[in-house]
Length: 151
Image (tube, rainbow, N blue to C red):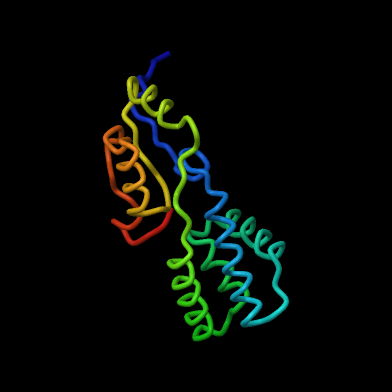
């Protein structure tokens, strides 16, 4: 049997490098508030159920999925609530937070592997890694912002 040498580790930021609790809770609060103001009668439970559905459907953007699911088929209203979400989120966006101890683990991994990142946080992820002197551990610094897509 032929052995293969593993040389590279691709790390997902979500739930691996980053504690997303604050981020996800703010997204939920914003969307529930917007949908209550627009349609009425929305709850965090509805939101989290829609999140599970979006993950199961491999949707590239959970907020867009949830908003479209509720607003569909009114494209103009959808565009308005999506713009409102983006504006509100940009004002309330939580600071990204690395998991405790992840820096030590990354240094250990880097001794044996090339490291790559896959994540949805764009330039703010690169800034966080730079501010924590971790960006140089990775072979790339490309983010979703470089491709105008989300993971």
